Every structure is written in C-alpha cells, then in structure tokens.
Image (cartoon, rainbow, N blue to C red; front, top):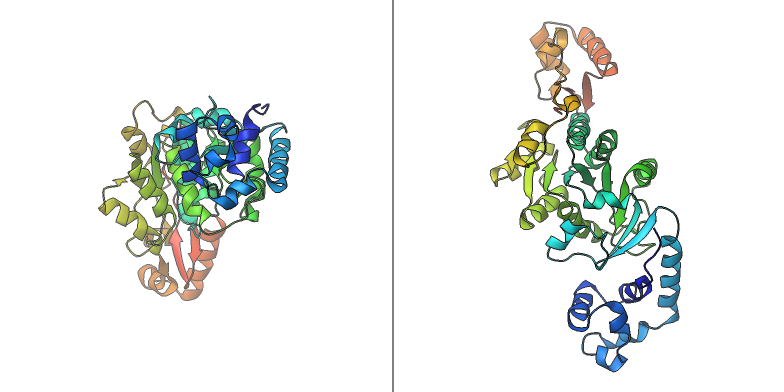
Amino acid sequence: MTPDPGLASWLQLTLTPGIGPATLRSLLRELGLPQAILDRRRSELARFVDAAPLQALDSAPVRAAVERTLAWAAQPGRAVITLADETYPRALLEIADPPALLYAHGNVKLLQRPALAVVGSRNATAQGESNAESFARTLSDAGLTIVSGLALGIDAAAHRGGLAGASSTVAVLGTGIDVIYPRRNAALAEEIAARGVIISEFPLGTAAAAGNFPRRNRLISGLARGCLVVEAALASGSLITARCAADQGREVFAIPGSIHSPFSKGCHALIKNGAKLVESAEDVLAELSGFQASGYASTARAAAPASGLLAHMGHDPVDVDFLCTRAGLSAEQVSSELLRLELDGRITALPGGLYQRLEKGSG
C-alpha cells in the first residue's frame, strides 16, 4: 500500500513523546486534521499540549522516527492506517477510544470483514488448544475472520484455526509491529502476515511491556462482533478482553469445562455473569445473524465410542490409582495403556500425575 501523503503529519503527532491518545483526540476535535494542527502557531497548541512535548514536536528524534516509519510503510504488504483513511476498520470507530493509527502487515481488507475474537489461557491444556483450533476453523469457514492476540496457548491455536478456514485471521499485538512477542510464535506471525494480517497501535520498536497488553485487548474485542473465551483462569488476561467486549456491546461466549480445572474457573465466572454458554461453534453462529456453519463445519466429527481404559476415564483428570481401581488392572498395565493412548493422541498428561481424555473440538 502506498503511504498517504498526509501520513507524515499523523506520525509527527503520534510519535511525539507526551502527546498521548487523549491529547491527540482533543487536538483533532478542536483543530481538525493533523496538517491543520501542525500549521498552527506553537503558542496556540500550548492550550492543549504541555511544554515538553510541544518542544519535542519539531525535534530531530521525532523527524527521524517519522522517516523510519514512512520507510517501513513503503514496503510491500505494509501500511499505516489513520482514522481518516477509508481502510480504517469500521468496527473500531464504534469503541470509545479508537487508536489514531494502526500499523498493519498483511491483507488489510480483512479488517473490514465480520470477525469473532477467540481468546484464552496462555498455559492452555491440550484439550483447550484443540477446542480453540476447531472452533476457529469452523467459524472461519462460516465467514467470520478470527481475531486474537498472538499469545501462546489458546491465541495461537485460534490463529491456526482461522488460517485453516476460509476467512483467515487477524493478530493484534501488544508490541510494535516489528517486535514479535513471544518469539516462539515468530513462524506463526510470518504465516499470518502472508495469509492474514497483523496489526498494532504501538510505534515501531515498542518492546513488550505489561501495561500494553490489557490496552491492546480492547482492539481484539473491538474488531469483532463477539468474543469467545475458550479456557481462562480467574486471573486470566482474556477476561479483560471479555469485559471490553461487554462494555463495547459485543456478544460474550464461554466454553464450560471441568469443575475441577483451574482453566475453567474464568469461563464459569463469565457464564455466571451472563456470558452465553457454548458447546459447539453452531451455538456461537446461532447468536450472530447472517452466519451458518459450512458443510465442512457442520459435519460432526463424531468420536468413536470409548473402549478399554478410555471408557473408565470420564472427562475429568484422573490418576493411575483411580484407573487401577476402576478398570481392575495393575499399575503396570494401566501405565502401559496410558502411554499407548497418549501416543495415539487420545489422552494428555497433566501436572501432578494426572491424565485426561482428549476429544476433537466441537467445531
């Protein structure tokens, strides 16, 4: 995308230290577009901007940052989208504090399409990741672009599912768009940039900082028609995204889980507070008008009836002693069968010597 000729003025304002989002909104509201703001005498701007940022506005470091960003945006597949651009996501114009700029790498047309946020725990269980990927693929095939935050665990699984479906995925970063965090997702980020889109509101080079991730969560929910929480502990950051979604008038969905799992506590709390309990992607689609599962998605991947040791496991985590008692087998026999089932992808080992059945996600 060719940079907007007026982009330099937007960048000059947003890259000046001390001119935050609230100050910039005041300037835009009172004085018009950035070039009109910069054309004003600096004494006039002093009504809105403190002395230090006003002095920095025309400084060499700010000019260098603007040039560096313009050079980045001139590369193929990259763009800086301003509030005044037609390509600015319409959904973000509905939230209370839309960012003045979005840095984008990939297919920016995806930012205009109907979307669903899929979020959850970074320390997800294998079942949670399977559910996230399966739900995301089905929802993507149904016409919803999947939005998430490129974190480990549920976010990464949701992006994989979105890429596997027809409507792709959007990754919203809490760093500068040229800083991929966590690095373990670097290959996934490259794939999203090639077949989806990565966006950030933070300037180039912005490192990972704890305060930036809750702020980016409002964009994850703001881009979407609803937010699905797959797994979440009570202290999970994904609950912040769910609260943002509720505050923005978006639908909130949660997948229930075992009453014994700490990764289900957050979802159960959301459901108690009014989130819609969902057991399949079709439950989500039923709440969002205009979407239905594709042929692929609605073909239930029915699990084969459980037999052998698997039939004694139920769906909650269990230990070897429990299975020995239930199945009437020795510890050696149970351990051997558990190893076989784990290698077959039918169960997963959990901390504390526990094992849990894995089911295909209910896409």
